[in-house]
Amino acid sequence: MKTFVRRGLSVAMLLAISSVAPGQEPAKKVSVSNGEDRAALEKELWDADQQWLCSSGDGPYHKDYKECIEFRNQYWTNQFFEISPEGQVQTKAQMIAAQRAAHPSPGVGPYPDDFKLMAVYGNFALATDHTRLKRQSVDGKVSEIEVRVLRMFAKENGKWRPAGAALVPIRK
Image 1 (cartoon, rainbow, N blue to C red):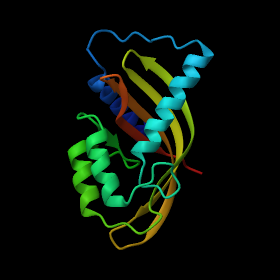
Image 2 (cartoon, rainbow, N blue to C red; image 1 turned 90 degrees about the vertical axis):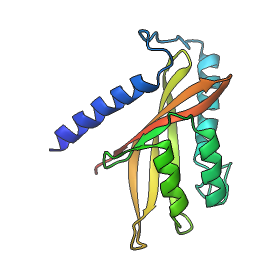
Image 3 (cartoon, rainbow, N blue to C red; image 1 turned 30 degrees about the vertical axis):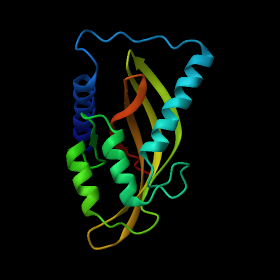
Image 4 (spheres, rainbow, N blue to C red; image 1 turned 45 degrees about the vertical axis):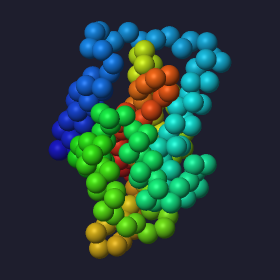
């Protein structure tokens, strides 16, 4: 069953990536071979990731929870989506609505590290990170899981913006 879920998530991620990739011509991997260029882009995308995750308590762009939600609503691309660790796909509108309805305890949120740029395809980039995700259930209990996240970014009007994410739980 676990293999089936992993394969399903892999297929879903590939389909999702192709749906947000600019233009639908064959993808041409852009060479970011110059170490300085690659390092600069990785730093720029890590910064975009930190802005996106503004609700985490220790991030450089920390905002109050409700302010963070409204920032994300403007910051994420219109086609933004996320695949949860359980395999649930949510659109930007669904995620914003769910976040507006939630009232999480302090400390609940994402805590990413180990960010790595993986590939660039024109105005589309893929990166990964390791994230400790503190979540709160409907009964108020806080739990923590670790996930590996595929982060997707689209460059619009010269600025890199979050286009999606797929979270895969790390089993110990």
